[in-house]
Amino acid sequence: QRLRAAVHYTVGCLCQEVEEDKDVQFSKQSIAAISEITFRQCEIFAKDLEMFARHAKRTTVTTEDVKLLARRSNSLLKYITQKSEELASNNMEQREKKKKKSSVAKGEKTPGEQEAAVTENEESNTA
Image 1 (tube, rainbow, N blue to C red):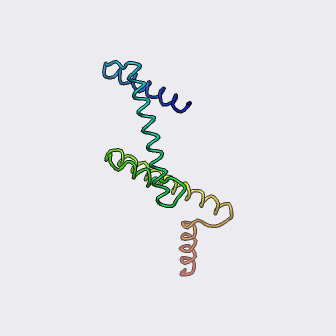
Image 2 (cartoon, helix red, strand yellow):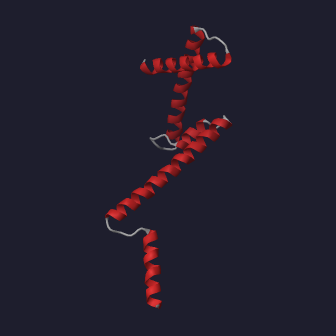
Image 3 (cartoon, rainbow, N blue to C red):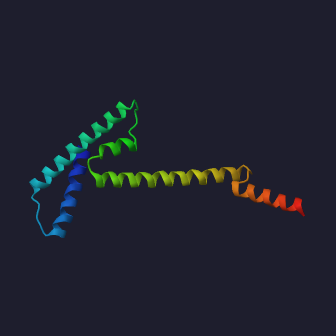
């Protein structure tokens, strides 16, 4: 019930924004109808995502499942793919930072420091 109320509230807010922007009016019945349709569509999406994961013999829904769900809307699929790539990139950067911090804490040299030490060592040997 709380989720349904949250959807109704959000739809009401969005309708209010459209009213101000486009100079139109939404009746309470139309807002309720849009809310109900939105809620039902979200239930369908949730079931589809669950089935996609189950079909792949997984218990977790992945971004690939979401992309499969959005396949009929090119703009939505493009947006989801872009956001997915951004998240993956950010996760990789954070992992790299954690690796550097843990190796510095253990007294290990980072790859750049190792290379500098080798170059320095080679220079002192040739002199």
